[in-house]
Length: 113
Length: 112
Image (tube, rainbow over the protein chains, first blue to last red):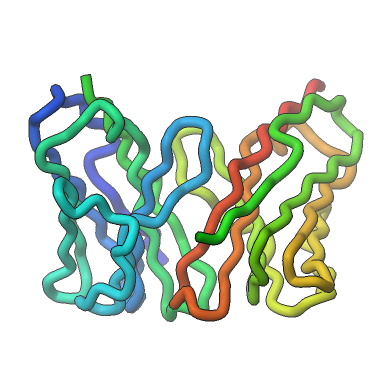
């Protein structure tokens, strides 16, 4: 089966600019996650979707971050405006159900300068 | 929130040696998972543990779910150069709706 697809792989932007990341989960996976991984740390959950509904966004900085999964398939994560501390790898993952193990994409490496 | 303490932070070993790393938590988890991450890639699942006391193997990898449900370890036997990477433990609690909390990672370097 095809894996979790993410794009772009790399992005460099200036602070205060906007950026968007895209994720296409494994076909049929109802649960989708966005994680932020800062260099030298483990991934940290930003938001979890079950189909097109948000299950957990408690750690999403909602003043600047937003995410949607309109049709319960693809998802986009947006940062507006970006700050230097947003430099990280943004990982998308999907699973059949919330209790299942999940599959990660290769991530988008964001550098804010 | 839930915190995971993973150790050691890094290991430098010779090819053929065995490796052990562990994770402890301040909270009880219902699931423990071990992932490996190569540079430029997302984490890949190595072993999943679903029951306290469970001992599971996957080739040269063995992991255990601690009896207290607050810890887990991963052993790699007879290491080879392709074992190089960052290993993460991750735990899932009872009311976390699937959310995984990750440890800080163990960087493994294997010298041929």
